[in-house]
Image (cartoon, rainbow, N blue to C red):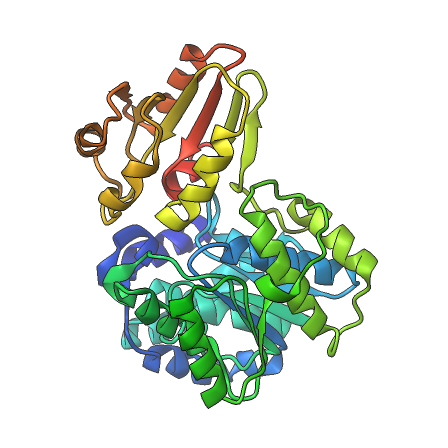
Length: 405
C-alpha cells in the first residue's frame, strides 16, 4: 500500500473517535499495553511530558515543544486530531513523520493490528512512540486524546504531568459532573511525578489534591503562582491561561533541561513557526477580516465569543458547523443574536446536518441565517456577503476549520 492507501485503511478499518464518535471509545488499556509489548516498549526509551485537559491541550503542548526546541533539544510532539494530513499528529522539531515511516510501520504490524482488533488511536500512539524512540528524541510532548485515565497515551511515566483545565466535553464517556471529568483527567497523575494544574474550580481542586496526595505527587497551581507574562504567537484570549501553564511547567522542567528565559520568550513567540499549529484564533483573510478557531465546547467558546465581541466591525458573520453529538443546548445560547449565520455540515460521518443545526439555532433566536452545502461554499458565501469592515468567524468544530485552513 502507498501512503494514501495506508491512511485510508487506518481510517476505514479501525474505530476512530474523531470520525465515528462513541463506538470508537475503548474503556481499557489492555490493547495499548499489548501493542507496546509487541513493539518492545518504545515508550520506556524516551523522556516524556504528558498533557491532558478539556481545552488548551494542543496549544499548551505546542508551546512547550517550541520552548524546548528553542533550548536546542530534539523534541517529539504528539497531538490530535489532525486538520489536513494524518502526519500532523506526529512531529519532531515541527517536521511531520515521513510517509515512508507510516507505511512501513503499518506494513510490518498490520497482521498484529488485525488479530487484536486495535483501534485507530491505539496504533497511532504505538506509531508515535516507535518513531520517537527510533529517532532518539531528547523529549516528547504527548497530548492525551480524550480523558486521561484510560487514554491510550497513559502508559508513559512522564517527567511531569499537566492538566490544563476541566470543562464539559465528551460527557458520554467522562461523566457529566466536573468532579467525574476531573477524576478521568487526573488519571495521568503518576506516583511521585510532579503535576501542573492550569485552571481549577472548587470542585476540581478537591479531586486533583486528593489524587496527587494519594500518589505523593507534588502539585503546582499555575493560575495562582505565575505572575509574569510574555508575548505569544498564538493570539487567542484563552492563551493567557495556557501561557501560565507552560511557564509553570518550564520551571519544573529546568530540573531536567537547560532552558533560559530567552528560550521561553522565543519559544512562545515562535510557536506557530516551530510547530505548525493551526486553527487557534487564526486570521485567514484580511479584507474582510476572517478568523477561524477550533473551540467547540462551551468552556472554549465563551472565551472566543467574548474576544469576538471586543473586535471592531460593522457586521458579524458566522460560518458554523458541528458534530452530531454536540450538546447544542450548551453552546447555542452563547452566540450573539444580531449576527448573520451560514450553517453548514463538516465533511465527516459525525457531521450534523445543516438543517438540524439551523432548526435548533432558531430556537435560541439565531434567526438571521441560511444554509450552505459545504464549509468551503459557506466561507465563499460569507466573503461575498461581507463588506470590507465586516468580520467573519469560522468554527464550531475542528472539522469545520480543517476544511478552510
